Length: 183
Image 1: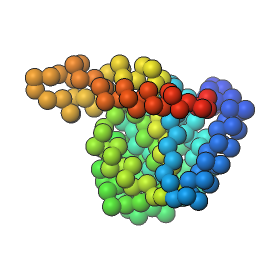
Image 2 (image 1 turned 90 degrees about the horizontal axis):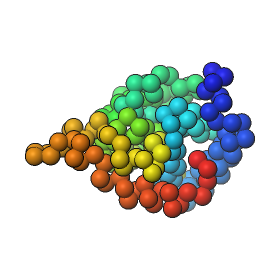
Image 3 (image 1 turned 45 degrees about the horizontal axis):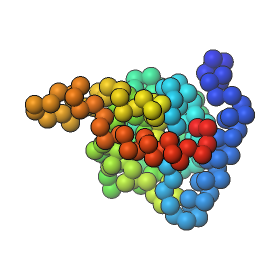
């Protein structure tokens, strides 16, 4: 655990907790959904997301196809407060099952792949005042990285290597331009 703790220094963890708490209060007051992009290595983004969750109450779902992320969070939340069959951590495809439901926080881990159908359905489940934690590889690298989800959305005559992540260039550029915080 000491090695994991070193990924997010205490001063950065405190700044992140304060940022999330303040921005979430604003979002709840205005009934706006809030997006926080956490960009970096899988270990760092996972720890940063868990730091954010430690400050939040309500129902949450963590979607990820990264096997390492399927471990229980270090600060567990009680999924019993969420209507069944929503559980705390699920694969990306489970985002489709969130249609017609409401959650307070969504952690969408795109490091193991980005499923646009699941993402759209899952983000639609966020209540007004809800928070989306989008975990990404480094934004400059993200559009060029292979995406395991590309196999599912590739159409003939194109193979996954030819349609890697073309739709991620613009969101990544927007996130980089808005990067006011070191997270």
